Image (cartoon, protein in one colour):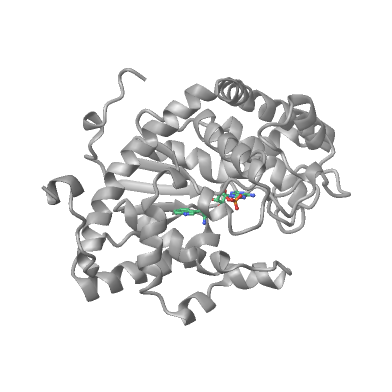
Length: 351
Ligand code: AMP
Ligand code: TRP
């Protein structure tokens, strides 16, 4: 920690920002291969800000102790996955209180109709969620997260595309109405096709934090023996041919993708290698590849979760860097909308 200094990290590179909600006790292999690995790859080229979207997770009623625990685990897993907290800013959204303030100011620039159109809200309420106002206005908070850091790019999955569009609309509208204040971000939709990981028990559905059965999800915190067992019990098909064909053989194709992404072996090469062998051989090797790849991840995660002080220091450092940018954005924003600048010191004003 001694070598970290704010001035040394002034952004020379374009800024990127992304976040994940602390909505489960562990990230899963889909989060890892579909998002985290990309985040890690981008941190060289970009000035990266990665945060745990804890304020967002309040939109669904959750036990406070769960939120606290999951926030820690999510941050630890970012770092265990390879995000370097001494070069990228890793922080909790709520540690930078400006997020809520910018969310409010942007909400006052947002039409009801714009929020009514958001498909994620419609999907969630259709599933019977008893929605609160926070869930309804969540895309505005997310727009603020992005705008706050002058992010040029926002690496997210396809499901977040609509939220990025509203972010661009809000930034452009604000600039038109109040003068150039915000950077308008470009979407950077992560190509999931290479690493879209499917549920092991229902390979036609995405591996997901909430909707999958526990047996179908490889949690990054699972013991290696549990991981191997889940892979060996993965649903395949009644043929015996190891062939990549997501339409008719989604289970086998998913295993091939997982192997290929983690081992760096091309899918065609794997098809050749396993030709004439049963699914047992493929599953055995996928289990090996996954548990081996996750071993260093698990070791680093256990270390971070075993030493909360180290994790807290990283998060404090990240929040300090984020806070510096956020305070500057809020200064511009408050000034643009006409909020009176607060006097620096009441004592000096009163003489
Ligand atoms: P979520 O689990 O929905 O909070 O998503 C966090 C990040 O992981 C997002 O960037 C998603 O696009 C990505 N992600 C989630 N599930 C998968 C999956 N099964 N395959 C690939 N990427 C995923
Ligand atoms: N909405 C994102 C998700 O559910 C998380 C998120 C919140 C986010 N704010 C963000 C992602 C800003 C990127 C940028 O996955």
